Length: 78
Image 1 (spheres, rainbow, N blue to C red):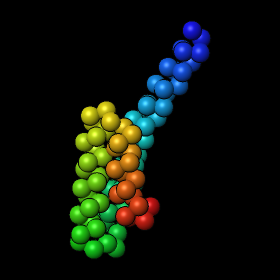
Image 2: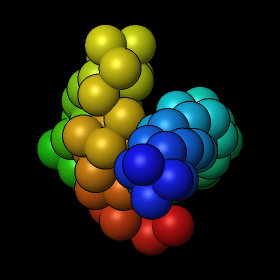
Image 3: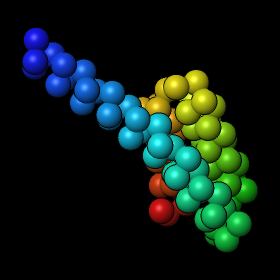
Image 4: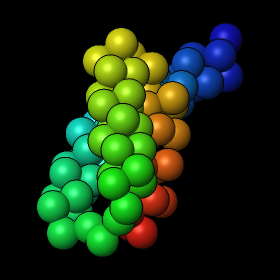
């Protein structure tokens, strides 16, 4: 029983870490976009991925949100 409780606590903590990480990642993207040297197509992809990440974050899908935001950051060179 003790092991189950520890496992549940760790899972809850990890989901909270992702939940709090998403806004920070969005902020990094937002700060970099105005000065990014990207093609129009790549800038559109970044904006779409950032919006998708925010939507996923608000829906509680933090793992998916972090993946979308990571793809946007990669395009930005972050």
